Length: 446
Image 1 (cartoon, rainbow, N blue to C red):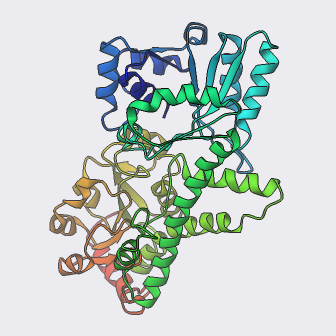
Image 2 (image 1 turned 180 degrees about the vertical axis):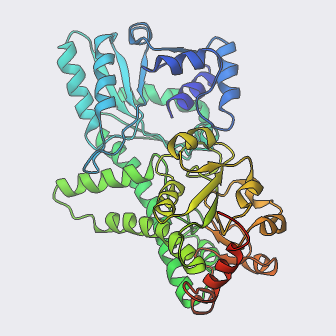
Image 3 (image 1 turned 90 degrees about the vertical axis):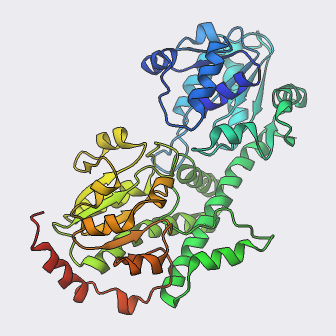
């Protein structure tokens, strides 16, 4: 988020210096190497570095004093009790305060708990002791990994919050070229807008996943259910795609943090807790489907297509695939996997998993294949070739990207998420399906 924000602000004609305490990361950026996978980012960064508008340093002392606007764009991960860990924000705020110039505007860009704007004002105020006038503005981000550049340049809205409306209006001028609605409110309301937005989107995901579980038992197809719902203008189609649940760096930690804030201030966030529970259930349902199809997982070879939490990113934070793989390994399975972007990081995090060169190697000798991330390249695979490479053709479609009838016609034992198959007939954990797998396994040494 910080790199995208800095690069896009530079692309709008501003002179931007990005600060990071990781000197190795700064060195890579200065060498023209982008440390994350984000479509379009390399081009925007390169263009603005060459134009002399974008710079990288690890020195607060050189970056902060000449700056009129200072964005705080650090990570706020989940703490031990689900609260937002503000240690990085605290460190950044203290470093900024040491080098602040008069009338600079500190802009909280990270997703931070309600009241952080007041907290930053207090921390900086204690340090400068009235010697340096400054302003604090909350400007929550609404960027999606995989489309962050497009989202920054084409926002649905820009939200600004401050106790100083004039400071907010000055920040608003940065975003005028984007031709988007600009909403100015108080600090705490701006901070809450971010949390409420993410909580609502996560709720839609968990709602459709709960409907998928019900569809599965009652013989309905959740994809058609979602399509019928989405045509209602009051509902809309966005975030109504059933699957293995949400992951990534935002939804999991933000929902936990909001629930924590609510609980410690005397509320009872039942809906938020249910959203989190349903999300975990959606992930674990994949394991149940594999057990239904194979019986025991001991010494079974399982292929996993996709590791990142969503396509067009290499981000593995809270990725559903990681939890599923952990559970598979715990039950004695051998896992082989492929992801178009996240292989290098995944190898470090999953040393027991065999990383493959492509999807076809993943299918080789597998008793089951699990689609975990809906990369476009997985939608156009030669499915017959995949099936013929497998030892037993169990296909778990965790993102519902394949047609059940087409997969069945190819000979797959297909299991989608809420696609309405008859569990009594097609799920046979210790019966015919399991016996077929055992018979097939005799031809290969796992």
